[in-house]
Length: 253
Image (cartoon, rainbow, N blue to C red):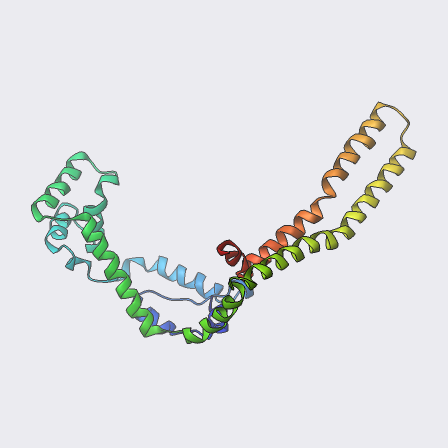
């Protein structure tokens, strides 16, 4: 979402990201169809040259449990350090033969491997690496400046007295708007179905079929559809409150 990043004054060093991550980074803006051709081309090139891609760890996961990882790799040749570590942590959920699972459990016992501790350390290392990459490749707008306006707004909207007055005012305007705006399409629907019912009454002969169609189906549809404008406007206004962030403040109050 590079367009949104630019609006927020965030600068992303794309070549730097590629260098740090070891993969191609393609910037896209799907709404304006920008970058899609380059993305497709990169996918094709990667698929065609997959055998030449050099594997690399995001961070050196071998440091977390070198002996246990080495032993697992002897059982499963070709596993990366990261995959070997996941075999140690998650082998119970893998589709492996019981003998293989037992061999991994023996490795855990022999090397005092602690799955929970290793998983926690892996998460810390991963987020540490992410933080380092972000510091090197992404320049964000001053968070203090971004926080000042919402903070001032919250001081007003969450005021222990004024906040509730504003809340009641917003809800009052919400429901007033629903009835005020919806009356025009509702009247139009009422008029449309009245015209349709009158026209059918003139065209069709009296009988059970005309009675079913006019007083049953047409009148029933009118009774349902006449409320659709109110429901649409209600959901539209609620969505607007959610997008602006005020719905979360209403929940807090």
